[in-house]
Image (tube, rainbow, N blue to C red; front, top):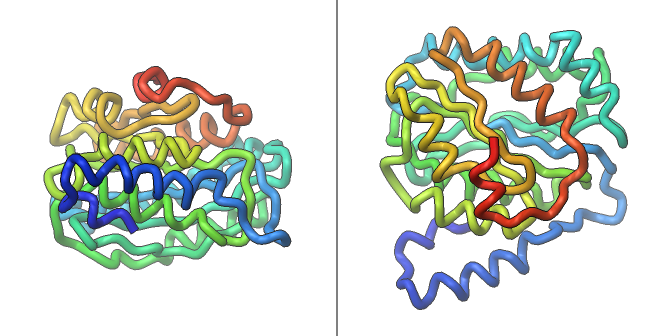
Length: 249
């Protein structure tokens, strides 16, 4: 969708920004789309720095979070009709995949079913650089015609390193926020002690955006549970200045 941005001149980019905004903004789904409180993309880092055991910790952490009573309560209380959730795996340029389909999660039973899908999801890539901008541009396209229409739309991107390939996240962030999508971050800080600051300055954006911190992959389970409760429980979007929103916590 936006992968060609890195090749464009400075004069051409503003035009594409406008076209992208027209294409994605509002993203009205089909007339028969199911209304939910939140459309949520969980975008998981699978780059070379993430070992298979660390990938497994992320999947187990997400699954355990969706089984946690506090998260189930948040989903059950989210009005209207809970959340629609999908899982993305990402690493370098042109290395992103939607690992799980959009799934309606609104009570204990549906949350447990989604947790099982997460646990059984294979790691589709175990190599590649860290292309956060590309992960964002891939993810935002998944909101289009997904069968749901959320009061809020959020990309929840987690990773253990700053972007080192592809379009700068700052550039793509502008497009995503213009499309009325919030970007939240989960910084896994075992390799880069200031990664949370990088996410805050260059990645997150949109109404009530924030960065959650995990000390390491072992701490991921606790961090993602906190993050999900905060995301699911957030009030409906209020338009904020992009610069102010991207610096919020």
